[in-house]
Length: 203
Ligand code: 5GP
Image (cartoon, helix red, strand yellow):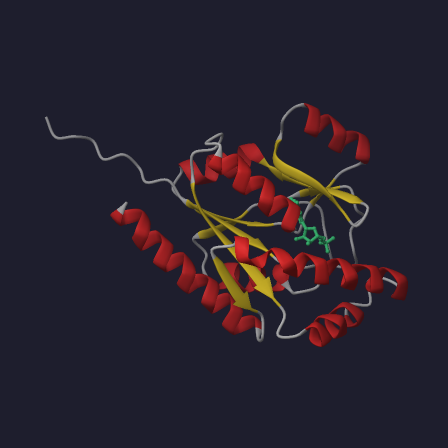
């Protein structure tokens, strides 16, 4: 009897990098041009910014609700970032991967580290690729953080200092991508995904 072909699981693409480097803009561009890639939508306790809506950029939840989700084991990882909590919903990620979809998780450096540990401990059996997005220079990062105008000067300075610290971990990642232009950074990530998917076929 011919063997039934098992459906290939998707690739988990973890995109991280310092605050203000433009992760969400690059990821949005990547998704717009590649409809077959799924975004993991995180839950957060922070308030929506103008133009953001529930279920689009994030699931906006109250701190009590977030705590319940943590206790229920609903998150693949979660972290406190700049005073608010953010978590990657486990069920949605698992289900998309098992259907063969490639999933992008856009997380801070703590989140990427946590996912790496979970995968290395084989608590989640999945092929992952870790991409670290960096700004072309620290000056450009400072400019981008200020330009966002969503945070006051004190918060911008705090985020900039945190970002410089976060840059120290980049050698732990599989790939480092310079976000010089959104378009080209998204294309580089797509090229990485293509290469990694080829490797999945070989392994
Ligand atoms: P923002 O509030 O600017 O959207 O995001 C703040 C930071 O939280 C960014 O670095 C973003 O990548 C990160 N982030 C978003 N979702 C998650 C998540 O589910 N887990 C973790 N660890 N970080 C997240």
